Length: 481
Image 1: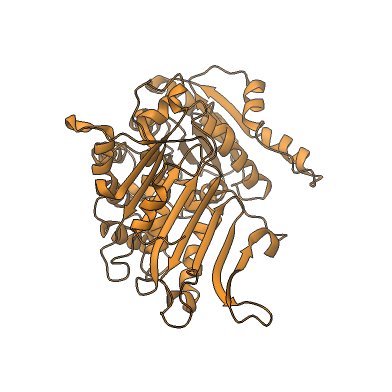
Image 2: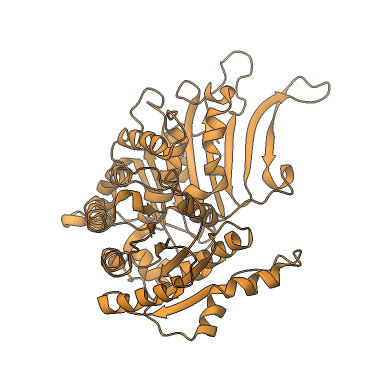
């Protein structure tokens, strides 16, 4: 059980391994810039990129700041960006050579030699292929670990490809890094709507009253993308949509949505409840899965011409506890669909028969993307002389309701949490294990492991809602259009 860490407030070097990759350039460096300009990074702080590629300093700075966009309404932006560039640097080196990490350590020591106090804090981010996680974490511990301050290791997904490989990776890293030092990141846990689930549920007694199987018919957690694999065909074909986003992102959202009330808001108490919830979910059954593959996926040069990898999946999960028994939770995600949309849709049971038969079901919809919003769909009397019923919605649109509020990006939230030592929005080792137990059997089936015949996904048109039969599949679990 990780203990509560203290906040890192000064004398810090952040090392990003894999600094030349897309994750670092598109998300991490822009997120760190936001924290820097808002005063959330320790002082003094340096950010050191580390990767195998040899890149000139100016070229590197250009690459990692290219995705930082000028909002156009801040006169200080240009000066702040130039100041930020001043804390960035880059070191090229191997991932498997201890001598290269010794050289990195000497570079960090030179930076730290200017500190006015002996404290030396180092944060290491593994923005790398998971195949080198254990090796690089070992080299960081053996060659670059600070003996005069805090050390924290941030591990990106994917952590394994099934239960066995995930446990092997967790145990491999744990040989060198303690659980309290390790932060396994799933950026969906940093999204504003997901962060709002606990206050929404437990700070409003009215909501607690209908958050169970007595009132809820079904829940859909959806991640729709309008684009295809777009250059990620090789990686995606080895992963598939379930492993890519459902087993991690959507499963994490589910755990926060459905967990019991924690004793306190301490990180350990929150994660304890998530783990209990995940352990109450039996493995997904084959018959509770719908698979699809968009037409054109096989045209990707990195995808085998006979690939049976699903680019769309709907998985039904069941929670065996008193609150949720009998409620289907449908986690569905796909590429090349008709919209970009990430949402939680809680559909309530039909109203009692006899007065307003045939009216639409009430729904609570929490939209993560695009644009954070919460909707409550209700039936009311049709305005005017008519005595019929019409459906309307109570709507909370964040940008409209809080026009002056800054809503941080998920990586901005989580990187700040690392500095604070807050594990509540990170994945603990036993939590990771519980999540993989839910999905590993279905992944082995879709992979065709141990000679099992792989299921053939249903073809669907690029830009459609998904595979044919989707509506029938949803209706089987009580979803009412």
